[in-house]
Length: 294
View 1 (cartoon, rainbow, N blue to C red):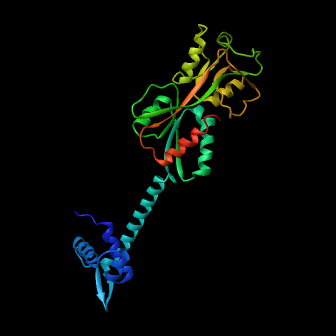
View 2: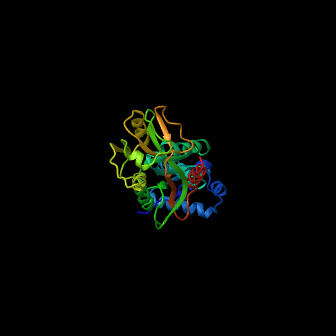
View 3: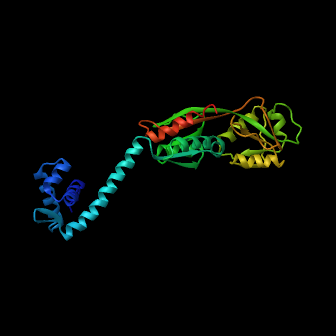
């Protein structure tokens, strides 16, 4: 079955509005024979007359009136679709899918979302909580656009991973504990611990930190939600090792933070697909990049 082109429908609507083949040809910047050909093609496709001439004025037939009504909707929808696509190409609108760990989502990502809401309100940001490995896999298969991932990462074909932030990992301790000015693996290994889930990069970093002194402590509980961990620390349940971003609010008064000896750092990167980056995605990348020192 042959499809009906929008050009032919546009010609039919122009004739219905102007009442003349000649006026429609001028309005559409078409040659008069082309206008006649468009209508003949439509009538051949429909199998019925679409226009009638009365006293030198062209009017739609009953069948033509129905097609003109539907054609107006189709043409309006087509214009709207093209406008939406153009806005996305220009970076004025669009959808950007971001994934990050719960730690990044808690304090870093909201800062970016606030800036984007102010300067690019028509960009639809969709946020998902994922591990770094899940994020990189989803970027590769095209179901994500931007990922905040733990570093280091091995080179991955088709992806760009740029270093973004380096935040110190601190000891979060119940305030009523008597603690030294700097926390060592030996001192902390003897205390009850609340550590990150074993699937996270932070868990591996802290395990390596403890191993420096030959320690392999078993935590009381493992979680993958930093704010919940801090709540347990505030309740006196144990100590935790967590990254601390400069812009993060100070912890609960029932918690004290202490630096580590040796120092430990949580490194994050921004990942996206290589090649052409849509403007809406580039806006998100630019805003995130501006937070690298926040």
